[in-house]
Length: 142
Image (cartoon, rainbow, N blue to C red; front, side, top):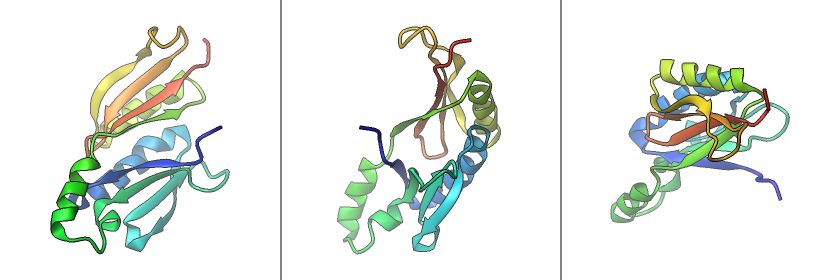
């Protein structure tokens, strides 16, 4: 069964910068901001072919109505996610990497073949402003 949607959460202080980073970094692979809720605290991205399938949510949205002590524990759980986006080709992987770094991301693995996964697994990894490990991969043979 395919994944319907997924997403990450950010701290309130990094939310706006993280959304802006994804807008810039994911443009080369055809993803864009499609919708937002709760005054921009929950943002849905997609390729425009249907409903958003990837979300960036602020912990402020997730934690509404909770006591501060509960909130601190929940915020501690939200960091350090990994998401991989499928690209149409290696050029799109390279373009993502360049755009992501230019937008302020930090390298976590330059574009290249990852033979441990498969001979055609070409991927790049970048840490977004909130520390999430974002991968863009193409498995198209050259």
